[in-house]
Length: 191
DNA sequence: TGCCTGATGTTCT
DNA sequence: GAACATCAGGCAC
Image 1: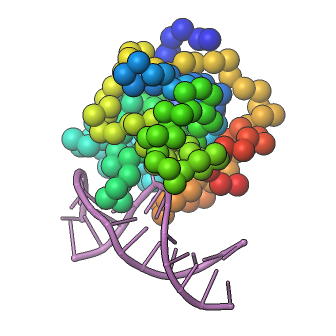
Image 2: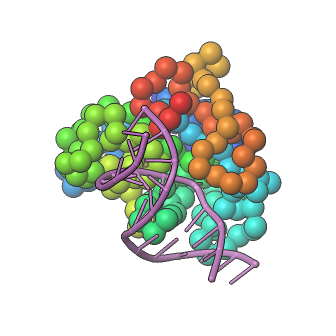
C-alpha cells in the first residue's frame, strides 16, 4: 500500500496505469464495500475528448483540483460516472474509472444495483459501478483520503499485465490509446 | 446475437 | 437546441 497521493501528481496517461489494481473502500452506514479498479481511461485538458478541454467551468472545476479528488459527472440524463483527479493543481486532468472488480461487501452492491444486475454485470461499466457503489453528485469534489469513499493505492502492476487500447463511447480524439485494463480480467467493460 | 431506441439532465453553442 | 466519457430492454434475424 502506498500512503500518499503524490504519485497521482503525474500525467493522466501514467496515472491511469498506476490506478489499475488500486482499491476503493466505500462506507455506507455500517457496511463497507471494497472493489479493485480493473479498467481506466485517461483524460486531460490537451485532449479534445476531455471535459476540461475547453477550460474550467462550474462543472469541470474539480478536474483542476489537486490529485486524489473525485470528479463525478452526470450524463445521458440518468447516469453518473466517476473520475479520479490527477496531475498538478490548475491542470485539468482526470482518470475515468470504467470498471471495478468486487472484493467484499458484494451483497450491498447488488442491493444498490437492484435485482436485475448480478455477477459480471454488476460493476463492468462506468455508470454501473457508480450505481453499485452509490456514487452520485454529492460525492463530486470529495477527497479520497476521507470517509465515506477511500482510495487505496497499491503497488503498480507490471507492464505485462496492462492492456492499452482506444477509448470507448467518445466521438473526439477516438484514435488515442488512452484506455487501460488488467489483462485477462473478467470484469472489464468490453474487449 | 446484435442492432435500435428510450430514458432524461446538464452544459455549452 | 444539440451533444453527451451510458445502460438495459425490445425486437428482428
